[in-house]
Length: 66
Image (cartoon, rainbow, N blue to C red; front, side):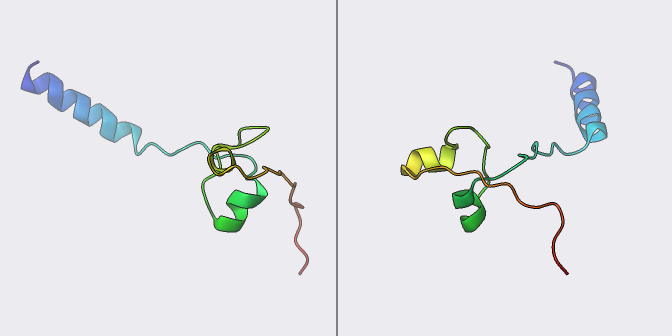
């Protein structure tokens, strides 16, 4: 591979910007309580599955009381 091709690949990756992980629409109660990244898998996310905890998803209200 030539150095000009390598430079072009680096330039293209800089244009795209940093890769941001896709957000999970809802975290389970365990991940939310521990502030862990929940993968959102159902019926049990990866964190709960590894630890053997029950995985519960509870919807959060869109509006918060002021």
